[in-house]
Length: 421
Image (cartoon, rainbow, N blue to C red; front, side, top):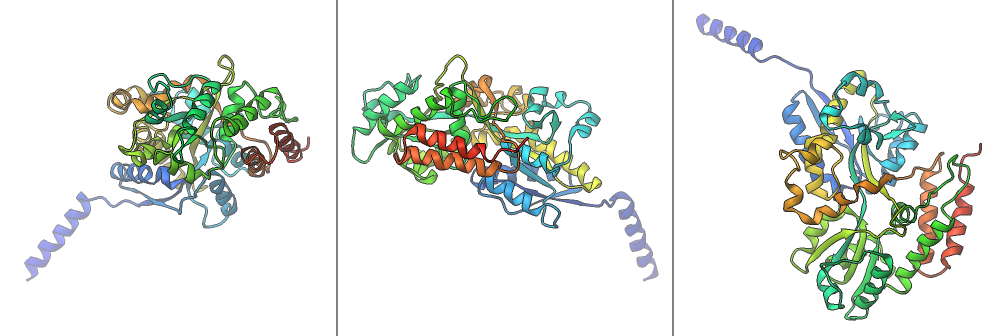
């Protein structure tokens, strides 16, 4: 019996030597829009934990939108509920910075020393900077594209192989599709929720939200007027009804809408929801000014919040992994977002062959050269400013106000919400 005890004791010592103990670090991660990102986050975190067994990822309850996400984080600052990392809409990074909530990633980038070799070029890093400060790493980036029902286009006399190049062409064909009857609408334009799709029209006309010194509202200038005139014409001439976001998506997926304009990030869900009900196609979104027009960069960035230095090291590993080539190789096919990592975009190991096999994803990729930052309003009223713009767009869509009236009202209200110098 004594001999058996000695053997067991020796075996225990041997196991202690050959299987080193390690302290597990648990990171709590928050993210928005689970409809887009739940499967993506689950896949990325699982792979990350396989490669980093000493780090455990657990998710906080996700937020429905970017706007809800930023407000949730700001409420949790200084409490035990605040997560270690979050994914923040690119236009809300400024709010996080102005409140000094996020960890400055600049020192970590500098210490790393080889970000470009990991696919993070200076251009990509700048997507998540505020006045040169590295607030996060761009995780998912998008631009607005045109989705269209090739069957309805053909039925209305259009050529589905040559999609509309201008808003005039969109409106004319939308009207013909609406005229087909049988409960069919011509167009769905995703104006609800935030100012991103308004930015697509405004920037597409060469306009800006505010003056260079951010003291004056400029979105109600000539370019802004052109933008809201297009929105109004989409309603009055092109067959754009007063849809909610979900109703518009459902109607398009059911084959009851000719054109849908929204983020390329919705592409994977759209493909799934459409199935084989009709011939789904995608194309570039028209620019009001084809020469000077730009498009807003949608999406989000991974941001480190924890002040615990030990956790920060683990969080930096996860941030780089999520925003790195593997993460991008999951995000793009899983959603429709464009790649935010150069290694992922070029390497056959990740996405090099993906676009050749999946042509519907090419529309967003083809517009990357005209992408500019999604504008972030200064001060503490960013969410209110966005809602004010949306509320006035609603007046245009439901035709309770003329475009100029609604635009000027929005500008006047926003001017009162800007920080006073």
